[in-house]
Amino acid sequence: MKNKLTKIEPWSRLTEWTPARIALGRAGVSTPTSAMLEFNSDHALARHAIYASMPVARMEEELAGKGLATISVTSRVHDRSEYLRRPDLGRLLTSQSARALHRSEAAPPQTLSIVVADGLSALAPVMHAPPLIDALRKGLNGWSLDAIVLATGARVALGDEIGAIRGAEAVVVLIGERPGLKSPDSLGAYLTYRPRPGRMDSERNCISNIRPAGLSYMQAAFRLLYLLHQSRLLGASGVVLKDESDRVALPPIETSDTEESC
Image (cartoon, rainbow, N blue to C red; front, top):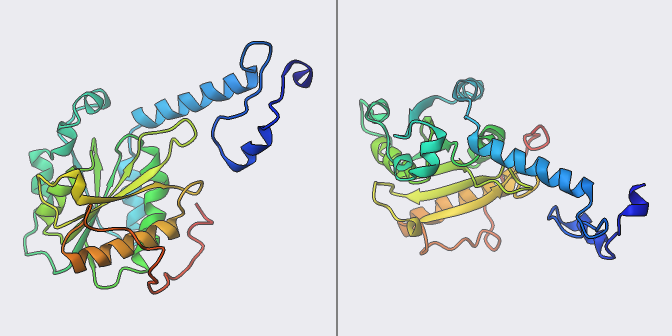
């Protein structure tokens, strides 16, 4: 029935190379019903990703099982509606969260803080942050990994205040990216060297689309290790730090079944 009513586009075979919504075909003057239903499903998944909450208790338990300490914090937004309308509040910690991050002693030298944040897709950090941290730890020589900070209602710049309070040499924020219709679970990693409130976006390096259908965990970890190494040499991150990880060899990261299991 479908074959009789739907006109197949002659270039539809290109869809095997991309998940993009191309060569949908036509049913009369309209989009085929199957393509329209798929669009509605993808749109619903994207909306769900934006409004879903990050299950902090579950992530604390999962990371504890990997031997990682955690600290949970929140921004000054009260709900997802306010989060979407007031991005400025998502860049500020509550006073209670700021107190929870303070150390009783000075931070060890060469401290790296990792912040796992919900951002615009809570699905992304839940699915991809733990295996990415696993891959990163295997090559993290010369850095003292701080307790993992789990942040809700968070924007990228929240990591600046967190890193400054923790006395970190660098902070990496793993945050859910704006969902696409074919990618509701895309994770971004933002590196800032010498974090402090007031840092500009031009002072960060970003690795985007981390997920099995995009940039793999091992590839993302390799690029992060390269950027961490280079930021220390330069004493800076951002536009002055070019990602040339595809041209420079670093010691290989120990492989495991991490990616296959996720």
